[in-house]
Length: 273
Image: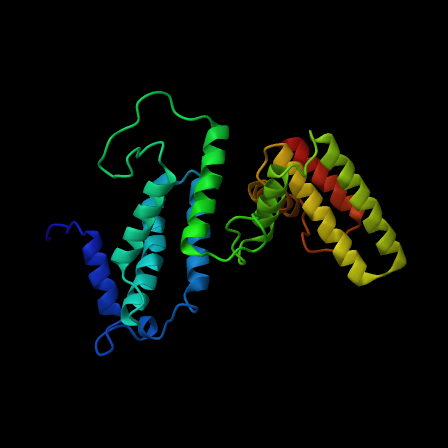
């Protein structure tokens, strides 16, 4: 058996070019474009998250490799179209991180002087970050979504994450409650409004008020220092495990049963945890 080859990043870039070779490459890879591989990128990202949450770290290198391959794929497409290359990706992120961490790279050089003295506080870092982002927008002419608001909020960001960022930016400008009592009262208010619209049978208004309720719940999570996306993922996992146990605890899992019977099974499973 031959010795295992220790492949490097250049080898992966070469492999990608071979896959996309019009004469001898893989038909599926050749057929892809920027838009067509976006679903795969999202899927690979969530597979990485799943392994981290499950603490299955021995499997992480393979999944991180799958995620890295997505970036290499985009870089190859950029190269073929004369837009950019992988080196441009590396150059861009390195320059950005140097620029955004002046408290680490004090002279702006990767291999330059190191900071002397204590690190900045969290509040100082937050203020510095905002100043740097504002300077970047001014320098590169990045379009502003609205005056000094929202920072970089991608249109495709998941709704829970976007809600957290929106409420955090509003809070930074002073539009916020002093403690969690405010958001809790807001949740009660939005729930009451939702009940009214459900009673009125106005479905568009029901959907609108339901959205307001979700936003209020996310805002409460921010006050409690709870990440809404992570909390909901954990709740999903807990529900999945409990309901699976409920089905396993009955002899006829698919037979119709009353809500009271289901609730009794639910309490039984909870008590056994």
